[in-house]
Image (cartoon, rainbow, N blue to C red; front, side, top):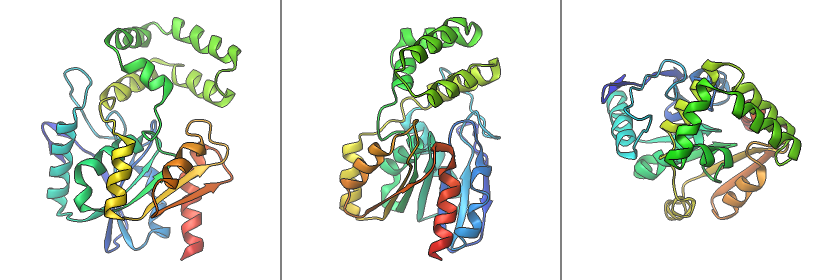
Length: 261
């Protein structure tokens, strides 16, 4: 599907009567939700590849996706598929896109499924690398010259500022140039798609739509405390904490819903 000269790639799973539009996390693709169709048989799932993931294509001038651009792209996505009402599911980085999309299309949205989502609480690394032009130039430099970044991560690791699992993930993502390029392009592209958590909460409370938040007890990337606090501010929200880390949350949701059916 093309909009504004960009290509949006997605997969469709299931044939249920309700529509669920899903966004995966960093380093994944639309197939993350392939096994959801058994537990979510009442939904048709439209799982979208983020830019620089899967088969979606983006040709930015400055690696920045502006809100009005995403609003146009998503509008044409809905129009072409004849989707009038829908719910949104999101995991990890996909939460940033999901919350922004909710802020733009809330009148058409009937519910949110938020799994260890980014965007509710500011991410230190994300903000440091993308907020200011000087930082963005340094970030771009490290794609071709990763040694300073490698030393920085090692130093932070020795200081024990972040959990070991977070440090290991960072080291993995800078291990080769393709991974570094994807981190750089993805982070810069979605950096402006940020939302006011207070405004999102206010709108959800006004609409009174169901919001389901899922966290991993051992999640060091998105600690449960942030999702728990978000849920506590919304009377209609349900919060579930699984006995797992970050990347196991999507499969835990599948098992959880199967138990309910």
